[in-house]
Length: 141
Image (cartoon, rainbow, N blue to C red):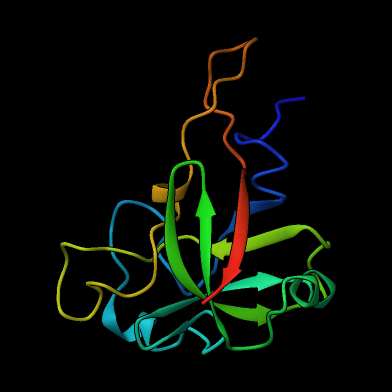
């Protein structure tokens, strides 16, 4: 098993990405009409939301819609909290496909690029990229 990067004492949570049919998750940006269909629990104006189990959020003193600092061994960003019973306690989920900074007025500065918070992890057997998540921590703003 390949462990996520980071010390579990410093970074007690695991951040994972998720894909949405409403967000382009490759190297291209979302068309403006598609960005307008993204739910307010994913992106609201320029703020990105992370999904977190209500029990985990409560242990960090976080509630729905509140701001938090999300840190990984690769960087830190400001996020908003979305409580979601469907995610396992101890995990955080962030949508891929946001955080573009060089596109146009419809996309620039909206959300966070998940790839800025995770680094490459090499599978020792194949040498392929095996990054699926990274250790993280949350702090109230």
